[in-house]
Length: 238
Image 1 (tube, rainbow, N blue to C red):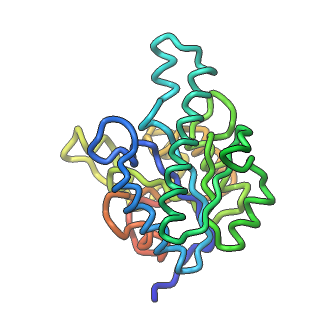
Image 2 (cartoon, helix red, strand yellow):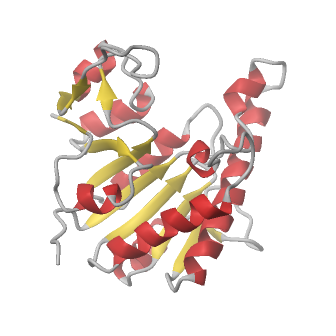
């Protein structure tokens, strides 16, 4: 059996990762694939927290450019992440993975409020914890929420799941000659404005020496490969 190189991990899933081939909403078949991969790494003894976005339902920043108040739009986006979190929890529980959803905005009828000690306790007991509603504050992205929760949980790494193979020197979708980095420093990511995560998230990881691995979620088995130390994607670190 493969041996994990990380004991406690925060996986950042974008809302767009749940779209599948749709332009809006949640593709349940995609959720099932993600859930099976999560179950696979739990069997390795890895403690897993998931920070989930809401861009498949509502994007606060985009809405604010069209006239909505930014704070209100961001709160709407946070609610979208809760919808995604509950959907992922439902599918995970359906295949036997014990899961808890914790939200940064108090809504006790649908999920636990985020409490650091309780979240760590869940992780130590082998439960997957889904962190929803971002940081609970407007003007902060779910990337920043992932960095924050990783630091609070004392995680070994942030895994940023994307639709591309890693971090490139330019947009690989628009540029056929784009070059992928195997490793890159936090400061270079910031200075070159490479859109790995937002600058606040990168700065938090840099200041606390928390590594980030950016990889392609659409390649089956990649989460396990990254956790077991295979050279998949791009590692951002000191």
